[in-house]
Amino acid sequence: MDFLNYEFMQRALLAAVLVGITAPAVGIYLVQRRQALMGDGIGHVAMTGVGLGFLLSWSPVWMATLVSVLGAVLMELIRWYGRTRGDIALAMLFYGGMAGGVMLINLAPNGSNANLTSYLFGSLSTVSESDVTAIILLAAFVVLVTLGLRRQLFAVSQDEEFARVTGLPVRALNLLTAITAAVTVTVAMRVVGLLLVSALMVVPVAAAQQLTRSFAATFAIAVAIGITVTIGGTVTSYYQDVPPGATIVLLTIGAFIALTALATPLARRRARALAAAQPSGDPAECAIPASRESDGKVSV
Image (cartoon, rainbow, N blue to C red; front, top):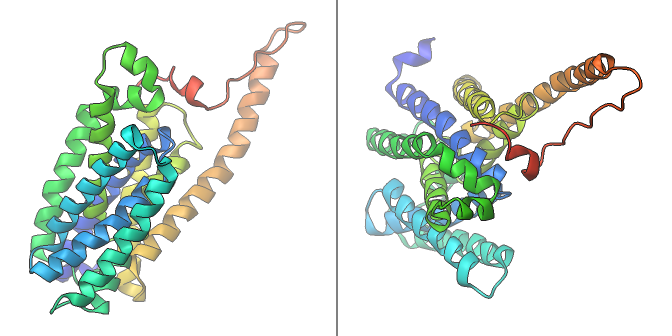
């Protein structure tokens, strides 16, 4: 536990815990909406914000937040009104965001490839006190939205048409989800890195779904996985001198594989128990597979 004696590790661990909470909390809605790659797109756009921050000598975290939010809003507007297909618009933001970030960082007087690498893949030693302050404020916003509006966001993520019929402001909630995802990307970029943040938003949710189909249980398990792997990855990165972002993502994938291996025999045992409990002569009821139709019946 000697790493706790260093201030930079204290800051890194605090940031890691906040990332472990916020990334899966937003990711569960993106997975339900079939938008698992949104984090990747926003991460590329955020690079332009980082480059702009270096060029203007402003905080890269806050500038990345601003540019990411604008990019997320633009994605939604293109999806609503654009004549270009959503995947093409997303690809254009991918390429344009990354190219803009690289160009601006190289134009900045205090920019360098080392600065770029720390934002792309995460870095423990470069998490400053101002970064931690920004991460705390942004994480508080994400937690308030994802928990305070969980029923509304869940309904829209499951079935937009049904949510619209019930009177929910679907477009406003979709826009809020995109903005919250953008904020989450900038929260995570100092620890995980912009190129890998999407994995932490998606994989813990996929791992949790191996054990449960309940929204509340999936949410709780995904966040628990997120906290565990971010702390484990940060500590491992310190002792082994390896990139924190890559370490965290590999641990997350390892958790997914382990839970999948655990869930498979449990599912078979449950199926056999249900078949044995079925009265003879009556056809067994078919289990409804996990889909948009079945998920909509899950209580929050």
